[in-house]
Image 1 (cartoon, rainbow over the protein chains, first blue to last red):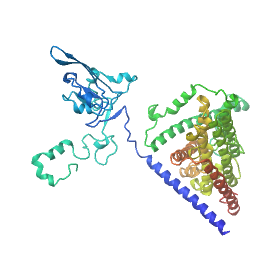
Image 2: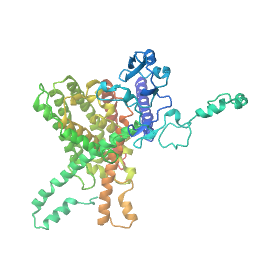
Image 3: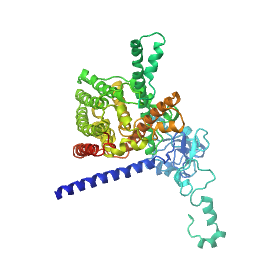
Length: 208
Length: 372
């Protein structure tokens, strides 16, 4: 008889616990109902790429001296530099330059080593095409400037997480006047100038 | 208690004014409430599908359907239209007749069960004496349809899904019927109208949920299991069984299953509100409001008011329960088949049996509180 009562007791306890856990779970899901989505509604909203964003490569034909350094530093020797030696002037004559973005890994080594700065990285990342051969950009396509997210009237630009004010997680409806968390680059530069050197001891960390 | 709008009587009187005999007036009247309830059921499904998608989105911090109509209200209609014009495929090795009859056999009993759902004193298709028993009987036709479509598909997933659906429906029907029996014991009637009227004495205080809390929980769990809602959606567990008995279905036949499961969910919610939450009753008795306003209970204004309040209250309570079902869907993980049968046979069945016995005892001890 005692054993039977014990069984009944554990039975009731189990049922009570099941109900309690169910209630806990339901309160979690119910609480989620009042949280709004922070999702970026791409193509209507887009994140502003950061300053050092490594997007599609931009190329200026007129600056290029056909030195082929970009080819040497490229992990897979990707850029195609099509030049001929002009026998009379004894100079290289550049005819064509192309990079296949279907193969490029956007490491930025070519941009880093280019002696004349004719290569640079843009913030363009929407490169999808219906045919992979369309990703092979020649010097004309490489010379086009991308449309800017902040100037495109059909797109609502949103700041990335690190560019939001302190403690803010949702990029929607943040006034443009709100500055990002931490010091801006020009503020760090001001702090590094020699006339402020005596203050350096009091303010030890520029990121404060 | 015989007050309230009698639309049938007024309609027949209206037709008799044109010189029609009462038989012809009755024949003209007959299809009207049926059509009305069918339309109400389908609109209810559209609203529930939209609510399910929106509430699921909110629970997961998404936005959900947004572009089809304002806030995506036209999304369910778009889905339905898509299914309507889709190609109807019957697998080559499937049994054509059983394959086609399956979804029909699933949907028809669910729609027939709407016969007994009252939205007011006279606002139901027919006040059958065996009301709630009719629903239990009709709901046991459904597993035959599920088994049929699962077997006829000639697909291992379909067969497993069909078998699971049958096992689940049969094992959860018993505690369901037992908890309904406790209510019937208190009401002395199987009619849904009598069950609601028995709860209408003192507004919210006289609702059956206070006298039958255990029965309420058992009934709700069983109703979810009968509808194959998420903690118990084993028959169509997509991770293991692709889509269960629905695997081979496409187009309108799939739409019938889809429609059936949502109509069943709304029906279960409506029945919970009728059996336990006072049906069309307002939390404060309407007689008290009428007395407060110094109006006779038979005044036309009060009658229209009570009828509309009744419909609103029934629908409101049902949709509150639908909301809880959707929230449960995103809270609870799916149970295993052994856990499902454990819960059904080892927990709900003894609990509902004990509940029935205790109710019978209490009815003998306190007849004024537990029905005489």
